[in-house]
Length: 116
Image 1 (cartoon, one colour):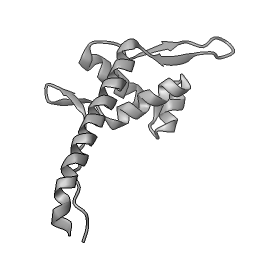
Image 2 (cartoon, helix red, strand yellow):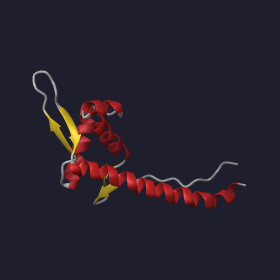
Image 3 (spheres, rainbow, N blue to C red):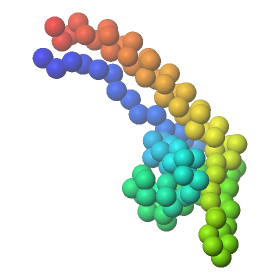
Image 4 (tube, rainbow, N blue to C red):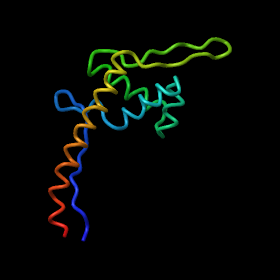
C-alpha cells in the first residue's frame, strides 16, 4: 500500500496575486551564485525576457528592488547582484518553507497508521 504524505506549495502573494515562489527563488539563488541574470535564467531554464519580467513584477509588487545591475564596458564586466531586500526575500522564503516541511513531516507520521 502506498504511503500517505502531507504535501504543500509555498508562495507569496499580495492582493491575491502571486509574487514569489519556487521559480523566483531558484532564479534569485542562481543570480546570487553567478552574479549574472542571463546565466541565472539559463540555469533555471527561463528565457532572459521572462526572468527580467518576473523580477520587474516582484519589484513592482513589493515596491522595492531585489536586484541591482552593473553595466559592462567595452570588454564586458557587467553583472547583477541581489539587494538587501532580495536576500531577505530568499531567506524568508527558505525559512517559511522549512517550517512547512517540518509541519508536513510531523503530520505525515500521524498518517502512517492508514497505510499498514
